[in-house]
Image (cartoon, rainbow, N blue to C red; front, side):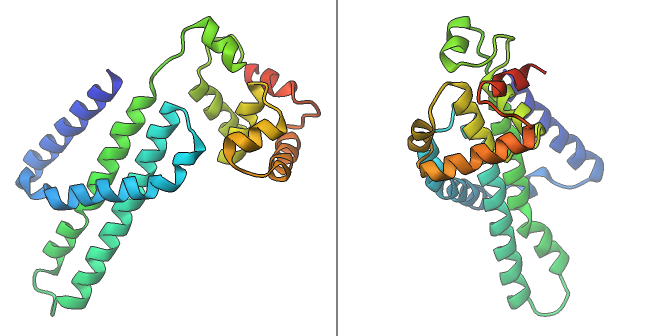
Length: 206
């Protein structure tokens, strides 16, 4: 529901801006460029699929990939334009058309990040994940660790620790070495000023 509202409000805003500024909204639409952004998003996400992210995190990562793909596409289009267009006549018009992928990437990012509003309301699910029973979802726990200063990878490790996984199990889950897991754990303890793994769950309640 939240995603639908975001899409509707985004489209409404685009219509309002186009009417007030007096330009044709259809000039923003280029099906080929839009699908190229989607293709780039999927290609950039392929190396990350082995991370086994939870669904909300997957949507967020896909949204970030869409942003990266749109920036790459716009850069290439502008680069080609600057190397082919002679003189300055119409260069601003061409420039405006070539940054449309940035708009597409941003819109996709907004829509996909709206898909992270799924709440885990089942106590049984919370106990299975090993997360604190104060109605914190996995996504909220993820964001909490990030705000505490952990990196994305350190946050992933911390969440798996909260689920009760050992270092070897975490290494297998994230497809990294156990030595790397130990290094991440050392960084987590140092940043959060902890000495025991059990204290990670307690930190989420603060």
